[in-house]
Image (cartoon, rainbow over all chains, first blue to last red; front, side, top):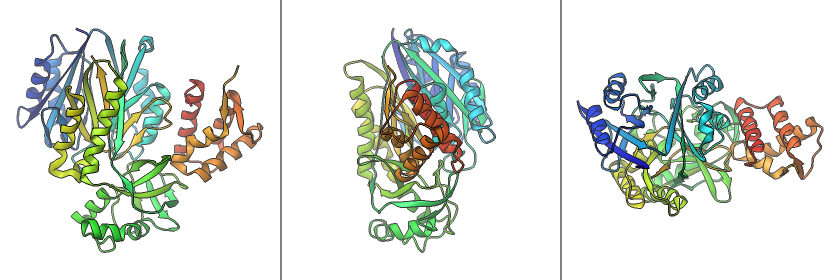
Length: 393
Length: 80
């Protein structure tokens, strides 16, 4: 059998059972591992109970989302289920609670539930799903890597852009303010890919005053004012938005913060993208999805729809090329919610190009932050990227 | 033979989050505090000491401390 990967999508009243049934139907035997991505439109406890009724004791992980998709369907307000069956892999999972009180402790608790025997496999990959509103996604990614220094994929849970409360799932449990870790041990190698479609549109702005994920000043000025000046011309020209006149909470305000992300130079012409979507007002500070230390140089970035779709294709192509001639069973994909916002009804095209590139079953969700931590990377937490994890056949 | 780690590699480990200038400042200060001197290259033990000292610097955030402990993990597994 080696490894089989199958997906199912459901929406409406019977969404959970439909998605699980569909995912299980294509497996030759029982599922050995289940991954669930679920819209905030559902009662998560009911969803998990319904899926577990079909998948039994197979380890289950999952997260609430800001959009979910499979190779067959992309949408919002649905449930995507992936089921893996394998006689060459082992699946280990753990959950940690209380990220806001003790970030390190929560990650250590989740890791402690994963047995040492995972280290016996020649190839391993980690999956990290965590509360998407901690504002400390990058630290969470690093702390998990310290527990298991292996390649990691994953994402920050979403809540359909309500920015109120996000959840992760572990076996029968649904929890907020928590992290779920999985380590998959395999006889064959995994592959990761990541890319973003953003290009710089400003000179670098230095973070001169910051507290955690809140940037108070850029270049010694109130952060939003400095940002508004930096994007004024391009925002007006490309999107008809005057950043000096937008009102907090308006559609234009949301579009401004979604279109224009910040990049941190990570070597050569590469940037890591940072999203300031949680910014509450135009009064001064800007709030990010992860910590931004003082001294960081932020460059405002923009991306066209075409570039976003091309980035999705490139991330899938990277993962496929990394697999070389090895057969692929399926893929898990972590796409930023901002991509969904930028692409709108075209989001399905970004999924379609990944399916075209990989030609295997895949399932994913729109996140509040993506993890793709490959060999040699210090961090691996991203915004507005597509992060792809390919599971070997 | 212990692995040799270039000072630039230590700076690189922090520069994408705090900027190159501050990363250089931290590494220089930490090397001085560790008593290993400012050099172009360090052996593994010296690099680990520098990472430890960065965590102890007065003006670093928990984010930088987490970065320093991640750096130690990477040095130990030879993945820098």
